[in-house]
Length: 265
Image (cartoon, rainbow, N blue to C red; front, side):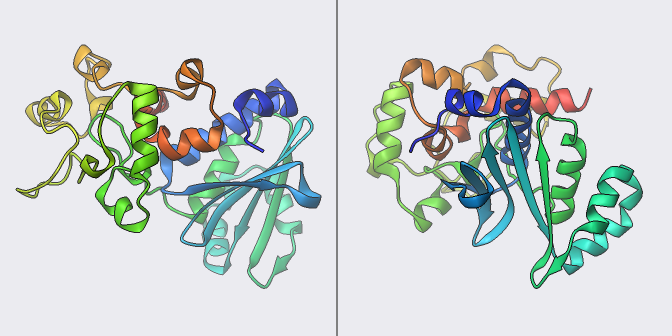
């Protein structure tokens, strides 16, 4: 089954869906991971795994008005937890201490109905793995993008990407002409989808890392490269969350940078 935001909202309810949305945004903003949807088995109706190269960051289990969040901490990660123990509530420390250690680590499962534990859950994830997401100057994600040259070498999905670009952005670029080394690549022969990107020129001129650092964000130059959020893409033509993150999520730069700028306030 293809899962949409409306389906998950109906399943989880408003408060629990907010927790899913916050956790998902944090993960997709912070980590180079893939999403894998599956049946939840005995733990839930649906599950969503976040992993990369066979290594799992966490798994979410969707149930009626409840979200299960499963994080496994290995030996080294448990040592890091002890170093940061005082940053966690007594409730979470007690849950941690009572959780059994298996051959591959301590299996922490949190059943939540709202976003009360959000800050502690995300801190556990940062103990599990340091954030490693790489953003472009305008806030796109190269490591999510099917046009990124390194991703094409691993799995060439340019035909589908070309179709999504045409459908949602009215871009007519043939698959064989889709390849990008990214705006941060400094090689003389670097290839970019937009070789005259105005955002890149502006960032270099102002000596910034990305648009979120600019006092004028979001300006007209940035907005000329603004990508579609899930809700905006859904209005053009309905699509499930998996397809969105596979082919369009890399370009939702405004939502991403808005979250980054709000965290700093």
